[in-house]
Length: 496
Image (cartoon, rainbow, N blue to C red):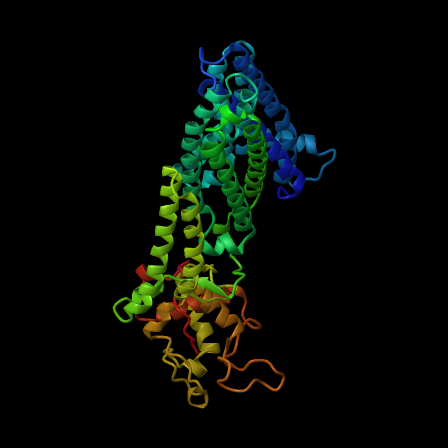
């Protein structure tokens, strides 16, 4: 069974939600309803909620493990599934972590039922953290694994405590609970955002992975949900909580219900991401005609006015947003600051065009060969077969056919080669290079004329990478310390 199908993803999301609310409810019992400030009845309600969710965590673990075992063992739902599940539980790392999670959840449930909910926080938190041990972070080193564990704990404490907050808002402790949650939520959000950035830096795969893979698309969905949740949280903190005494908890309860809905969607997106291959491990397909580039800043000494335009535009946007933040904190001139924060970016965006360059679907491709010496040698043979006629034996653009071509073939030993990412070279070698419009008339069939033909019909993907490796190795300006691998790229310059 494919683990990316909706049913396994939904099963994992439901289980993750149960773990999060179970842990979050126990945290809320200590943070939002401390004794003796909050009644024993309210604290008892939170204990019962935590106990129910921990029990739900145990119950929802079984269907998810069965579906995941089917994917690991590559069997369909049927008579062979029980045996495959036992095999996965007894002989795989995934199975061992699952069994440990069962033990931790059982311990947390026992502590809740026997009157020790404070102690239950530890096994419930460990059960939630164990998700990191069977996710993508397990292959990222100890720092990334720690970031994933902290991310799970912070998200569980924040999102998982929302149902507990909703319960407290129905009683006499509404004001104190809302005020405590405000500061607690800010700390949790900061931890969630910081760890998310650390994880994205190694899992998303940069701009290419973010916009050119399914994993990146789900990350963007999760980010949009997170921003919407932050907007609601800010509304609660800045508007609804201060007015709680005057207006009552009705509107705040509605807002918390909406936060819970968004939180469940975020957990669903997290379960979806866990079933996908990270963008950093895929060849992204860039979907846009342009891509971001920072190399304009390399021309500051030659054309400072070109660099100044986007820099000033960025500064204007940052200042406008800083003023908005100050207005929100000081509670002064908020409408004016909001208007400025909207208008300034609209006016500044056209001045950021220098940070964009033409792009190709393979602009963010990464080499499959990694400059292996054998790949360079294979590329030398391919160059002799397909490229020498135009580019010459040494790649200087002086081959036998060079004089008959207009424009002439590029000198592949020149410094301009450093301006191009590997993905650009891959596209040009596979599809050819079209002449700019107006240089020469189109071919008789209406197709654009090319200054260099593509070799995608005669060379497979690995052969093209081998050819790129040789071209790089043959260029005297190209050294191992300045490889253009996975770079933001450079201004588009036609190579012929």
